[in-house]
Image 1 (cartoon, helix red, strand yellow):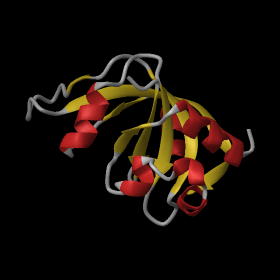
Image 2 (tube, one colour; image 1 turned 90 degrees about the vertical axis):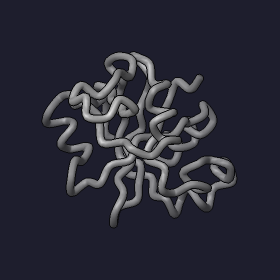
Image 3 (tube, rainbow, N blue to C red; image 1 turned 135 degrees about the horizontal axis):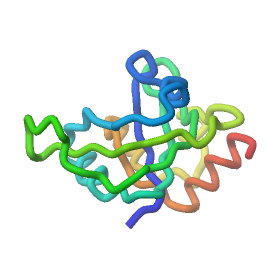
Length: 136
């Protein structure tokens, strides 16, 4: 099971800056079956890379799952899950999708292969490479 995940968000709807301001959020709205499968695997303490979609297309920050994923409390659809997330730190600089696509380390990453997936695992190697590119 992964210990690090990438969560995508449209920054005009909810950005990493919003997460920092709010100090925590319930990560919801995931409907894709594969993304939901991954979201249900998130455990408390797991690292979450926050990726801005839209015009930005970049990994911008690091968060942390505050607990295990759980059923969406709104209860409208029993298949849906959510997870509580808190910010850890903004990356020193965003790591763009273009940079990621140019780097052979990421060739098999779902971010490159399945660009519409909103939640996905991140390997230790991929996480380390993102942090190197960000200047950590």
